[in-house]
Image 1 (spheres, one colour):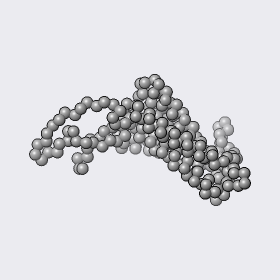
Image 2 (cartoon, one colour):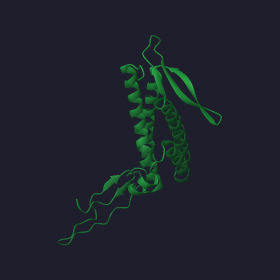
Image 3 (cartoon, one colour):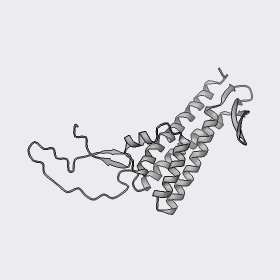
Image 4 (cartoon, rainbow, N blue to C red):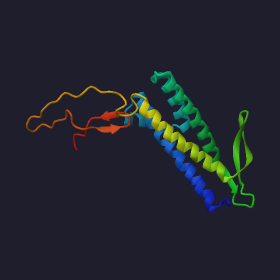
Length: 195
């Protein structure tokens, strides 16, 4: 096992958690922008990498976001998310060798692309490299929530909906009109008839 200190491992764990928050929200945002129900999206995006999801999100934003400044913000966000994902992959998939030595540097072997090949390379970094990725991932999550709120169709309430006409129920019949539904990301789903 690599000779990493508890502080090194805490920083690594913080980075993994922060990046997983970004990855976890991108799929539902993509399915919402594409107008897919969650069960269909689950099948459509099964086994897809985070990189694939970010590429699909970029293509979908180009088609679905009409406001040019908002579209540019989305594309800037996607570019930063790809950079964080690349840095995260380099760290998570590294073979960690040493940490906590007198110099404070952590040694790892990472695969680096050289032309068409990936070759193992020695990296020396300090704990701040791990915390920087975590910090950038946390900023991405905050910025993504702001984009979601300002993009029509991503979150419930981001588009005006026509009021539902009032109706009274007859005896033995449930009144489904005006009944509260579930908010599933960008859509208001009908209420569960069993509830």
